[in-house]
Image (cartoon, rainbow, N blue to C red; front, side, top):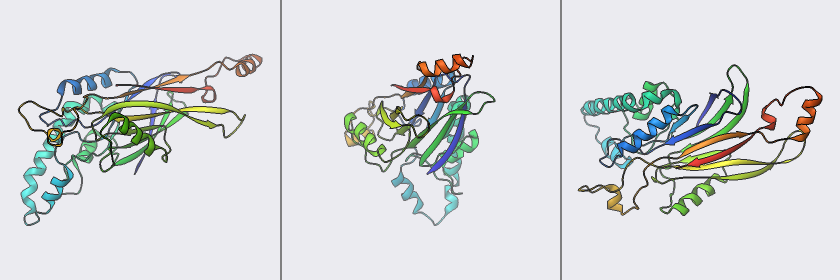
Length: 297
């Protein structure tokens, strides 16, 4: 499990911002939707204060069983040099063409089940992270996302738990997929949960009831978000037998989920009275802030 602390600088404590998880691009697959993929990249690039997180399967090459088969050939390891060069070039092209323009928005990239392993022990996702100078998020990750204004201390923190979803049971129906995600999140302490792999696209939120640990004892409802990151590849393509067709999977809904994090500052008469007495304006500090999560897909 990769642990990462990421500080996000926003203009004010009341500035909303979106997070764009993305996965299952499969850019070199015949079913890849270049139109939807470019729409995603454009929105990330042109949305103020946006963040993006990659959850694997950026290209089609290769699934686990194919990598295992290749690894069995040990007689002449130099024979793989051309293969490694080819995949390095593909990773370079992917970064230059697609991810370089949103590099400043990227928190990092995690690994999927489609990837290439080079002879030196690294995979192509690690290689892309090196080229982009962004963190490699491994198979699963916890991100401590800290919000701060320029030259100020952190005023809010969110925990993000992400995993591509490979080798995790994933239901084929939308309702089953949502329930599986909610059930698995029950024993994992985060504010935002993200999975991919099954090419389903949906986001949902629900509140968690808790109470203050310090100060005045009162009830608090904290929002939680649960996201299946979607995909950018069609399951069925004319004149082509796809993996989805072989398994008779449901058609995929191409696209992505956007999570908006919106700060709220509810009116607090006691707080207002105290500030009037002290001849101060409402400070807007963390203690009086609440946050709303909204998902769009």
